[in-house]
Structures are given as structure tokens and as C-alpha cells.
Image: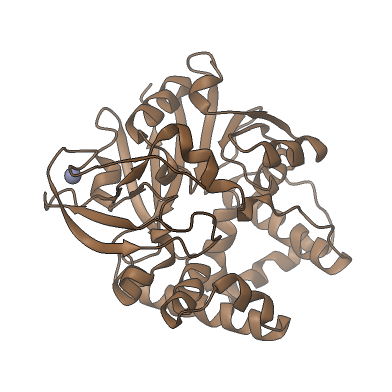
Length: 341
Ligand SMILES: [Zn+2]
């Protein structure tokens, strides 16, 4: 595969020169660009500390990096036990995020049992991107991947639309009956002040010009509307522990790896809030196997289901405790902007 690149010596956000942090990294997750080496630079500006890839693939060749990708996974049909669990979770959303209650009977009384597993609550909140209900609200998900979240939010009452640059994701979404379209959000020509909420999970780090991308999001967001993005945290515990083997470096797909400060610097005209979440178990799992020199996807498939559940539960508890002690070390940044009225 031929990927054209360009050098990026200065910080794409504040133009300060960058130091090399990790040199000669290889693509190790999907093995779709052999023969290339990538470096990660960190901004010398101590109030920024943004990280970026150097050299960077040029925009026209980015699609070549996604020929194999995890968002191509199709949803599988669920059994009665999982369906019951989903009804309990929906009841939790109704109470915690003001969604209209549709379920009656046992789930109405059972949902508080979720509080016996407090390390799991952040995972539930993330399923709906921390989004409170807006009656007749219009929602856009940028980069909807396998469509699971878009389907859930539609079923909870949002008029949900998805956009993704990946043809396979769009085909799968259309087959599932979702309202989805192909391309970049900037190509869709949505009207001004159109959406009550825009959500985007782990997309902004793949965007060549995140500032222009966020400006477009703010244009199409209604005054009072919420923009919620998640992205890897370059100050995370996983990055400190596993360094060049940290899974979320993901060269060359991750063009940017934000610090809390560099993410907030993208929007200065509105009130922003940046926190970290406690949902990084799979990042820690993958990083451990990369550190050991194995392919994490192969290792995941080799584990039996019980061991898999046990390891992930332990990792969730570990991250839940550690991020309670060290506040900014969660694997994922959660970026919230409320557009001024
Ligand atoms: Zn910078």
C-alpha cells in the first residue's frame, strides 16, 4: 500500500515546535501499512502538551488506513437475558438522564441494583454519551461506526442522524434502518443552528484539521445545544505505564492525541468542560499485549468467554479506583461544549 505523507514538526494547534516522544512506531493493530515508520511528537509549550504524528499521512490517502477496522463489526442479535439487561439499563437512563419511561413491571424496581456495580456506571453513561433527554430533540452522531449507539438513542426518543466516511458502516446502518449518510460532516451542508446535540466518539483524533471540524459542529449546533466528544487522553495512566506500546497511539490513524488543555484550546468562544472517563479497560488490555509483543485482537479471540469477562471486570475496577485517586489519568477525555444562547 502506498501512503503519501508530509512532515509535521510544529504543533498543529499552537505552532510551537515539538520534541520527539516516540520514534519508529509501526502499525500493529490491523497490519494494513507495512514498511512505514511513524513518530509521535509532543508540543514543547507546557500549557499545551498536544501530541501528533510525524510524518502525517496526507488527507487524500487517509481512507487507505481503514480497509480493515473494528467499526465494520456487524451487530449481532441478542438473547432474552441480554434483552432484559438492556431494559434495566434503559430504566436507568430514564431516571438518571430524564428519558421518558416506557417500561413497566420488574425493570422499574430492579434498576437500582446497578449501584452494586459502581465501576460499571461510567460504561452505561458512555453508551448514551452522557446526553440528557431533549423532547423532540434532533441529534447528529459523527462517526457512528457499527450503529449501536445511534440505534439506542433513536429508540430512546431522539431524531437521530448519523454521518460516517466509511462506506461499510453506512451500508450496515442503512440495513439496520438508521438515518445515515456517507462523508465528512463538513460536506453535508446542514443548516445553521440545526441540532440539539452532536456526539462523536473517538473521531476527532482521526481528523486532519480538528479546529475546522469543531467550528463546523458549532455552526450547526443550536444555541443551548450540547456537543460531546470523546478521544484518547495523552496524560492517561495507560500511556504512562505502556509508553510506546500504548494502544491509543494507534499510528498512523491517530493524527492527534490530545491533552485536556490542548482539547479545550480548540474552542475559546464558548464555555467548555473537559473531564476524563473510566472506560479504558480495552485500551489497557490491548496495550498489555502490545507490550508483550502479541497481536491484541488474536489474544482477545483466544480467551474463553469467562476469562475475558473476568479480566475486563478487574480492569474496570482497577481504572475506577485509580482515576478516583489520580484525577486526570482516565484513558479517555470527555469534552463538553454548550453553545451560548
Ligand atoms: Zn501546542
